[in-house]
Length: 443
Ligand SMILES: [Zn+2]
Ligand SMILES: [Zn+2]
Image 1 (cartoon, protein in one colour):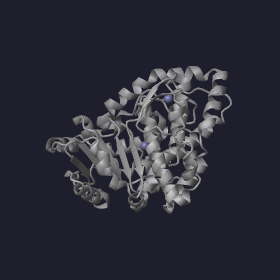
Image 2: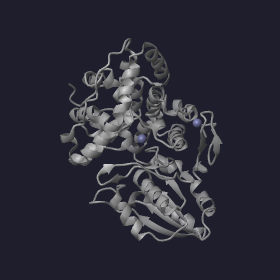
Image 3: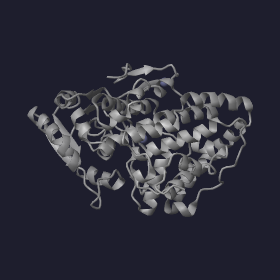
Image 4: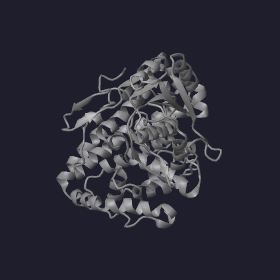
């Protein structure tokens, strides 16, 4: 284990003044991890009946062997293969949830075998049924394993539901390493975002007094250099780098769970990705994996901060008054609500920026947290992660549209709002795209 933080299963009073709880009691990353599943699950089940959730693929790579191990230990395993939607990969949405919920048999523990969608649906169903759940991670693709949140699409809109984190996470290095390379690279994109999300969190704390916790913010500091400084090792799936990646992703989930909000691991860089996802639900053009889009968003965030930090005396600019209703079509109502809810904070932001002392103090705080955009871009490139818009199957034009609409979708301010307020957006967007050679065709 790369971290000295022993917080698993603990409830503790923190220096930030809050009491934090980590419901996850076990995180076992080892080649023998599957053999430990029957015993650990036994603590939650008298009758030894488990609902095992997987999709076709995760059942083959891990579900089958986990099932055998459980059955050999006297368990009844009720297998649920998550259905595909319209011949496409399974999705986490209200429709799939309803289908599964209706046909679910009784069991006193649930076990998810899989990453994003499988884990989210199992977490959601377990929360609804008030049943404890555990997860077998099959790829280092995202930080959602240990988070309490589920991110389903409800009536076509990407939503967030607060559920409960798993009581145990099992990860077998052999399974993680044999996952498609693009999934591991996606995990790197999600993880590399953390310092930028933290910078946005610091910004929200300074402007609006949002609760900030140093322990949550710095939870993966010891792990970060192991992947950030060794992207080639991530690409070649060297054991130490992959273990750092998996541990970093799990602890990023804990960082969110202990605070109860997503601020420690989601800022402006995530909005870029969420906007691309939401554009997909409007125009039907497919999007890429979360972490692959977030990685590129992280380069953009860092580049925006570099420009922000070089400003001596801020000039205040008004942000667009309203959202783009034509662009958002049938989801413009919920987008308009989010944007309206942010206006008061944006006024506070403009007011505070006019104080020279405030500006100096803010810059010192932000500077301590950001990472250089070039280093982030290099790391993603060398690790074989998505680094250009063409890698995420997106034109420069579409990426530009996403960036210039990203401020509309959430009520919490991020670096994107600060950049608009300081006049960096929209004017420097093309320059940033050019500087990081994002486009296939350039400008
Ligand atoms: Zn994420
Ligand atoms: Zn704290």
